[in-house]
Length: 230
Length: 206
Image (cartoon, rainbow over the protein chains, first blue to last red):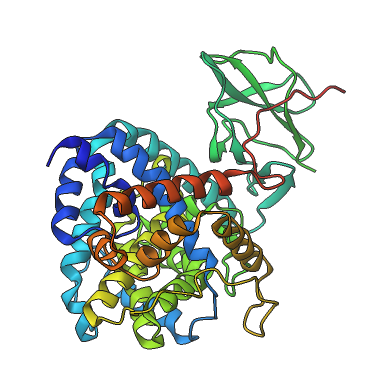
């Protein structure tokens, strides 16, 4: 099949409306075609929005515990048990594998993004670790949350922050009875976790500015986030 | 995105859906519970719409969440939202089941665009209700043929070649209705909700 014909399958693939043979060909093409990867990401968002147009009756109460139990029995470092699937589901395991491959193609072809993602995951985990400690505090403000652990370890979580301008970066600052001290550089994103490189004492203020790439020793702009650990 | 879950660990309260999937990738079962509390209901509603059978819908939801559990380390936040990623698994399972069971309805899915129902006893989630109304209203704005193609494919489980045969149109026409329909839906849904647009910092002036 010509590449153009394969591009044309993106919408049907996003709707799970390809015949199996076409789906296989499309997935093979997708692995190599950045344009289709991007288009698929966009069209899949629209397709999944359709899920929200349905009535949403509450699922049976025990479904949650069944899922969790099954997941527990499948922890990756444990040899997977043959799952106690009901019959039709055994048959779709192969489809599950295909889907995993299809989704995984994003990963394979975007390995340069993996480092970024790894770093982001690590930052998110640092935030979760702070929050998990007894006595941690959360201070919410318009576009995010300041999180401070009992030992003063702090992190900002910012929602839907546009990327910094070209050649620019965001820089966090902690000010505690004195000039703001640099506390880390970061970029925008839908949910940005920013572990702060300086402790946040009670009463200290955390700020964010946009600075030149590489950061600055002192803020050169007015902060667009100012939140006090109070 | 989600509602107030039943047993939300305090440490998850502030996390985005994407961050919860990141925790899932570390085989954190409480992250799976959190994801279920955020998306279980919409996933079940979707599966039920496709399968029209409670037992099969439960199977599809269970398989979808377990597929997410097994593949969480492949999730790429830059490539889309966690909810989309998860619902893709559930949808794929449901469609596969409906094809296998051949439960697809022969008549057109006339209830494709339901008027926004008043709150039902089971429908206690204001956010989901709003979201449903928003998507239904966007769907209503699509030309009939595009809406029909999207609904028969997404809720009906019909493939593009089955749709072409059923509607007596060339496959190319069906493809193009699907594409235009999804693209237009994206535009309609992309109109930002209050407070939801990406923000560009504007310095405080004090």
